[in-house]
Length: 265
Length: 259
Figure: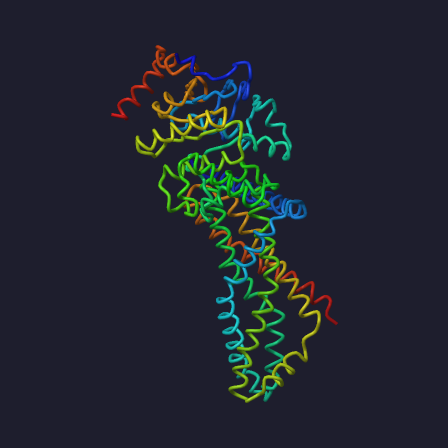
């Protein structure tokens, strides 16, 4: 009886591990297919622009709010530590480094993973379970090209723009706090802020946001495209899109920071 | 009389299926299916839910692939077609889904324009609009042009689904449960539409259903699928005059249900 339970447990674990690797392989094939399809005509320009609007414009309010609060709170929290050493004049450059190097790409990506990723997962999942994707296929339209390529391109293209916007809004939040405490002018604040920012900081953040955008798009589309089991499957696809995107974003953050640091003198 | 309903030269074979097998995991759904469908013929595939009817037509249009056996559509072996060839074949095969599968983020007009703008690129905007209005008129729903799918009734959605496939002028129509979930009057309208489509667009059709009224009204021939195999093929009268108990049970169940 005990051996029987152990065997069952072993089988369960083996099945789960095998399932994980099959899923991983499918996701890899899905990503490869994106690169195969993206350069092949016909191009769905209208749909790409529509998706860019969905990803960019519709996330703007949330990103403005979070970016501004991040900048404001980060400055407020850093002030006591710096004022102990009489170094509050370093606040602008400290905040600029933190926002440009890490916070702007990461906050933008996490917000987009929640808003855009779940939206893509749910939309494609719903299309899958109601056979709308099959309907596209039988009408000789490539659903991968129309649905996946356009969405992944849109998230990849829009994420750097959103990241720049988050950075700007975050810096404005920080400026508000600094100005209220030290009456620093707008120009002096930004001059001090950008004194310690290098090309590598901006470049690595742009690369990060491109990678994050691509991840959010691919994960959302993959989970939506492979949804099953009716409405329950749609919910799972939306949920998995967010969770997996966020997880991968943190892994990518670690890797990109390591790579970038190796270029720093 | 029943044979006389066949409008076709029986020699012109549009769909040929031989020894078709398909399993999902350990569940063998199709266990050696053979079927011939001739030009401009309405072939009805009858069977209980889960008997593999929908799987059969999904294999015909290349949405699913068989485990073994051969499916030839318009002379082409579906499983051996590459992506481009499969797309070309699909332009000639329309598929009307059980739940219509209308794109719910698009209006009726956009639903119909979706395949049209991608496959009839030479048409001007005016010609496209004319095509869309003409097909919508054929299915009797011109007034729904700017409505969203969510605003339509079940019967209207089915009609729009048919219109969307007709817009590419397919030679073969595959109907998956065209009358399921509809009241008897709307079902009758859909049955009449299936016949109208055949006459007006000269289509060959496979109609998947478990509705005997639909089978009787639309079918030139009927094939009875039971546990993954065809147990009887012929006209409606031939199939239901059979002494096979499984066919009798199916007939009686429908009769009791429709009462």
